[in-house]
Image (cartoon, rainbow, N blue to C red; front, side, top):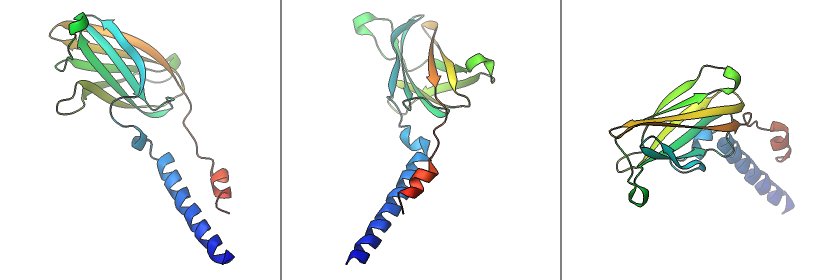
Length: 163
């Protein structure tokens, strides 16, 4: 009876280990579209008001997702702007790499948010410059965020759990 229980427990641990490794090695699974950590909230940018969210939290070297909301500057009557051109410039710390530029696109049919993905190669304080151009004019806003080093998998600790 004890031998059977030990075998079932070992099998279960192996299955859990495989699932954990798959999740850890698949950062795109955790980058759901839209939402995230607020970085800009109702910030003026020319004739527009901008909102920005990033994923994952905390930001790390590798893939990141940026969601941008653009509204008119109409106070209580602000409306989403869905016909603008939105570009994001990712400026690395201390000019260690070339800046990265991405065009953000609407999230899909009926979407009111623009989205962009980028792979950022180094840790440090990155500047994010969001540029919006549309029928009402142009605007730009900037924010900075610290990117942590890439997450690593502690294989020794994981293998110790299956023994």
